[in-house]
Image (cartoon, rainbow, N blue to C red; front, side, top):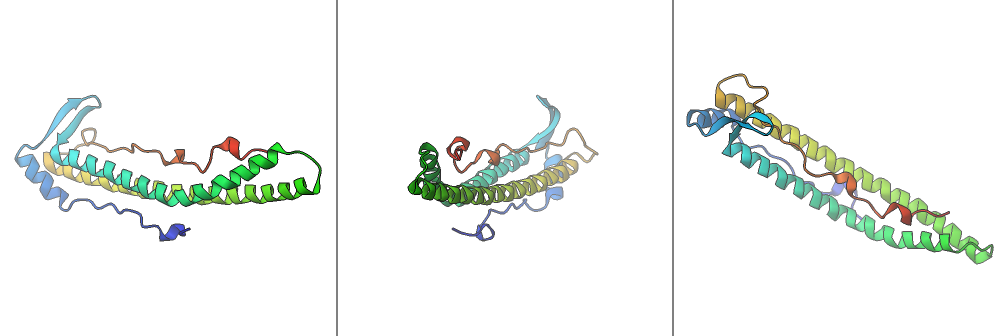
Length: 178
């Protein structure tokens, strides 16, 4: 299993020169303020491209997270089966006490794996949030330059479309017992 520090996460790179791009698009009327479902917003091709780039970036981070979590999930599967077996047999014999000890070790390892997965999820969230703030900062600079005015409500804001917290090792009911 790779250490989480050795995972090659994707990196976010904003396009260069947001102010000149905004000024050029403003002068050529490629970016306009329109009424939409969220109120008055600036619309334009560069804004759509930035939103699409961010969605692709999110998908890349999710793919990398799932690739990094797959070995953890594969290791947790047999451990969960061992815990379920132990929970099913409740007799007081030497064999069952050994099995209970193995199940206890398996539960402990599952908790360790879950902590590793939580660490990976936190890393993915931090990377995505940092990229989101950089993308929104780019849009802010671009929008202000394109309209040659102070804009607040009209600046488009990107938002996250993926929730990494839904990724789990195994269903919670498989770990219970004992």
